[in-house]
Length: 387
Image (cartoon, rainbow, N blue to C red; front, side, top):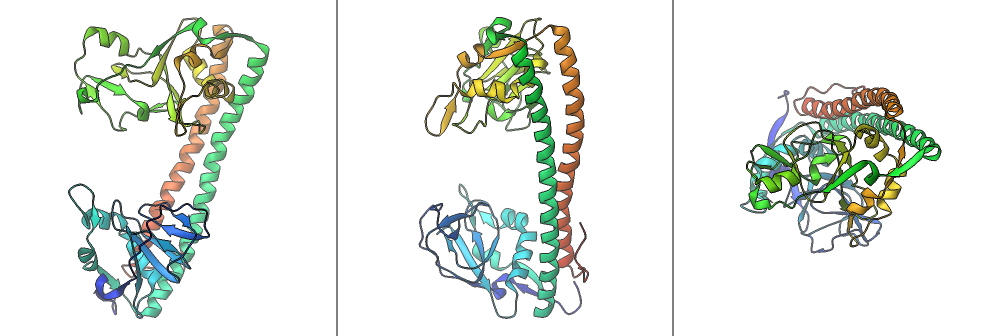
């Protein structure tokens, strides 16, 4: 620790604001931010506090928020400020640095975890003089603003790369769809519904992995997303549920009117089982699975698919009939292969760009942690970091 700094406990630094009695869930379209457990900040029509304050959830997961101005907070949120000899933004940055650690060590409970306030108050914080705190805050504010701007640019570039590829697919298949022969999927493929497994039969390991909704994203099987397995299955069930190589699967349930499903991917690995609310499309030799995969990512296919959406206000569903009856462009296999090759080339280049921007975003998050660590070890230079 830097010479001249003190070690204080948070209990010596913080002052608790009054406990909230607001039981609203927020999002009333009000003018005041409403702090509630979690990362999302909602809105409300009334304020109960003003000035520079920190808001912490008392249950669930630990996130730290700082806000300067009139605001409200829920009954499960703890609002604090600092004493005269400490800068609240300095405390906020310290808590931000230790967000994960506090969440792991100071949220306890058998079922629902809650913030242990007394343990929290025993956390030690390195505290320089007030002018030094303010100098550090000024540098961190500048650095975080620069990082946020760079991150926004990287995210926009990432989105642009994705949209470029999507636009290319739409243009290519729109022309093809308008000029070529069309068939419906049932003319060239067999569509198979998912199997209704009993969740009680699932294990954490086994011969067959059950592919569920959360495992499927466009072009990707997320094997490590809450994986479940079945080790043994009777022959009848195995025949119905076992996926074959080159099957194209499509998710059939999601949020109504949001198009957050209808994801497609080609099966390239054995011993996958198809769960309910996902369909498998098994093509004949007249139609290449990858050609359909690319077509399924276009608005031409999605418009047909979601035109058949049913369900309640919250949940949308698309049945097997919407798949079997969907129109697809029908061209010779040789021409399908040529188009696949062209799309593959662009997809590879797009994925390279996406990887670059994803790494940039990840590096910027690591830079934030590095800057914070330097700040609280007394190593922060007099000028902000360059991103």
